[in-house]
Length: 116
Image (tube, rainbow, N blue to C red; front, side, top):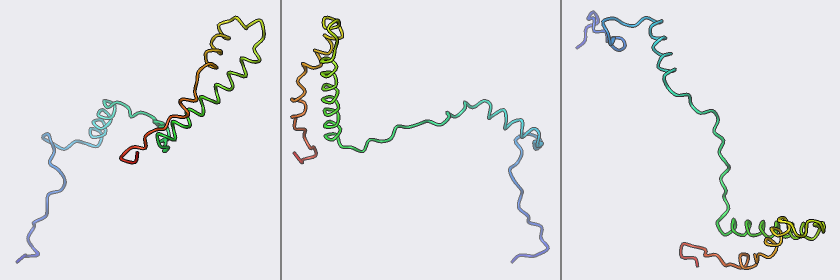
């Protein structure tokens, strides 16, 4: 049974760590000191969007891009002035044009996970 006249109020809040409770100014100073001691959080970290394509699709896209670039370099080599025919630029363009990318395009990639 409980009597209404009994004074059984619960204690309020935590007990102070020291001999007395901190004042508002002391509490605020302690908070500011702890905030300044922590390293600043990095500002907005931009993440690259996730590539949702499958590996075989990414492979086909990469090979297609390489073949498109090779065609552009072939056009560049064809329109190169005669004065630059014996230059390092011409040699690099010829090396790129001479690459055989059809073997990359004809490669049948495994589908993986038992679907081969």
